[in-house]
Image (cartoon, rainbow, N blue to C red; front, top):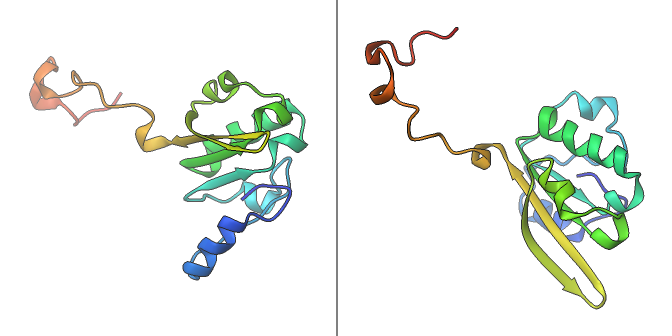
Length: 138
């Protein structure tokens, strides 16, 4: 998890699932020991509000490309100065919106397995030589 402060829901999850390993990082560039690892899920909470937008874009893009196949970002768009389109440009989807008093938090998610559906034409039926489908890569 990347964030400026503790996230109570994460602590509750850890208590319920003690076998889960959690790595924590402060907002900003990932430390080298974390940047070299691969994770099942990256949580970015209370982070983008504390770093420049360019650093945030690089952080999310790097995590998406190198560190995790699933990402969940919880951000206050007014506080961080981002727009929904900034997240869309990183292939994240708007999943949920939470309101509390005057604050609105937006949840954006990315899952590599759901990023792009396999086209219906990508099969042996439409292949020039169906007997060679899936055998040769060039």
